[in-house]
Length: 187
Image: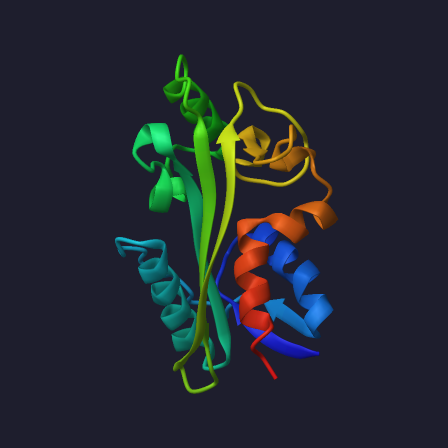
């Protein structure tokens, strides 16, 4: 198994990428102590690169970073790159989103994930972007997943991400799409 540092402090994201990475003979580990990126980029791509460089700084090993979020058309793309900082805890984030979408008919949205892979020398090996289209539910539905999954209805289904099994989610999610593109290029 090839081991790659995954630039996150989120155990749910780590579990998700490890589930997918197994198919490619890759295992991901959290960065060494001292990993504390300042996500001041203006795009998912910029923040992904910032996280990758910070994880490389503390580990000096091959690093994969992602920046991802929910982009809602009726909210002009918000919460977007601020998804993790949209409100207090995840419950408050979902409540804020449901409140802001009250009375809104056009509920289209997408999850976006941008990834950056740095080699053992800290140089960019690959970058990718994954998008999962859908819409915002009126209320929370489902118990699986994390983040905004309980209010994101996957396009072409009547289910939220939180109603899907991990296996099904890992076939269609924004993070899965971006990660599979990156991993397919590894030798």
